[in-house]
Length: 302
Image 1 (cartoon, rainbow, N blue to C red):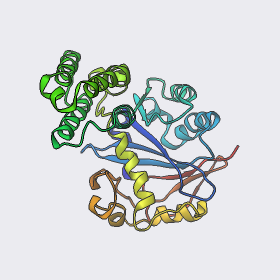
Image 2 (image 1 turned 90 degrees about the vertical axis):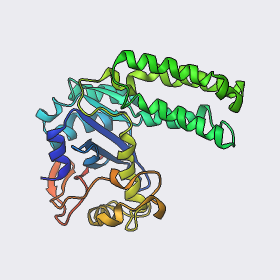
Image 3 (image 1 turned 60 degrees about the vertical axis):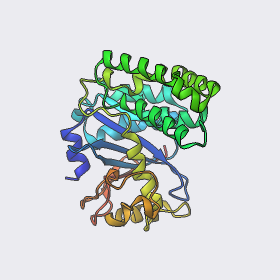
Image 4 (image 1 turned 30 degrees about the vertical axis):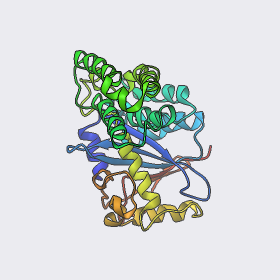
């Protein structure tokens, strides 16, 4: 049994999902599902070539394909599905997920809320090393809500301390009043309003909850396109599939200094040598047996 499925059976409460593009000439998005293992690393369960990212596709994916692949019993144990929040069909996505995972809710990746939100609404706080250190400290503080801060009382106290810190004399002296006010506005209007998506204190009963881990799943998609034996936008879907199946693990997990990017080496899903189940027009068949990451599936163009 592939490592991803073993982890899913052992730790089914949390499921990550992400889509990536530019992997084949048919322009079919590659949708990835992952779970966390006992060491907190993200392992891929499913790779799925989807025809598009429209509402009907998500409904078909979650209502038909996913239950057939991982089993209805496992679906009933999943409590949270974390997505990147980039989809324009969130309402339809929520409906599709809730129809399959009856005890589950969808939440957004905390990294997208904080990191991407900071880039969009705050940007640079200054060129000095002191200013950069302040920005780093504030973002680290926000990420602590996903792991370190556990109880609701701790979370509320930490939020209050963070706001006090941003408005403190030592911070304002370095970044200025306008920038400090901008950060406070960002925190109140773009972060705290989404606390139900990322704060651990609301999900203490969900084993392994970590709203930052979804970006590690994105790292696997990044690796597929930027490792040495990579998939390319001009490849046919069949060719891209063969490349993904044959990607060598030590090449797939390139170090950051070799150009792999911000994703650390140990967050990339391990490969596992097993047969690769594929879906084509609703029928299962075996595509390859010389090793692949997770399981590859073709979703039909209905």
